[in-house]
Image 1 (cartoon, rainbow, N blue to C red):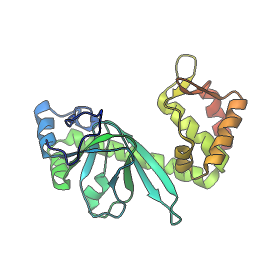
Image 2: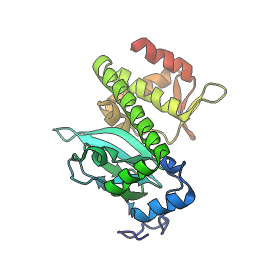
Image 3: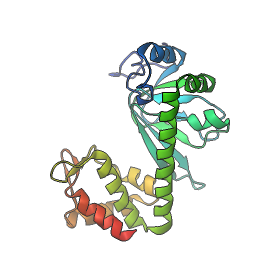
Image 4: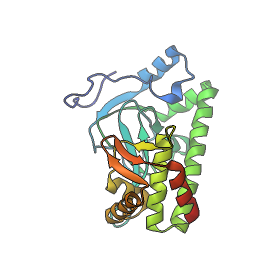
Length: 240
């Protein structure tokens, strides 16, 4: 499996394979290995573009290591982050299904091994393995539900409230311990939160400071600690 660029210093020199990609959990090892051989592998450096919006490419991409950020840019050039695809995830299936140009741009958040599978191979795999097809449909259902939630938030919540809702979303994703605490690690960058909820870094900083003063969260070495996830959830629910 050859790569198309030099490996950054300190990174793995060989493609890691697709074992970490959850989509292939139902495949036998031999079938997964066959998919790996059909992929083009590339190690992207942090902040390197993987996919351009409106590009005519159709490949489906699998994140073997690292993180890929799906985003769009407004007419004024402001970045709007739609989602982060962590190691084990995939993206690009829409273009493979409908043959239309890319609906968003994708950038590597950190050094990331990405495998690109041609659309024809991807569709053939789905026909041959119904369990994989079902997992793709479940993922698309989750995306639609998340998009619906974001549309509601943008339509009904002010900027401050959207920041609170995003902190809650990340806390729920991190998971609460037995005491109801959640640690968001690493600490979210203000610009990233602002991009996700269509506001400014200054607004994010102000809201996080307000939440800290009210005892909802604190910045600690382990990460951004939400002291009582249920309490924060009640706050957000009262606003919706």
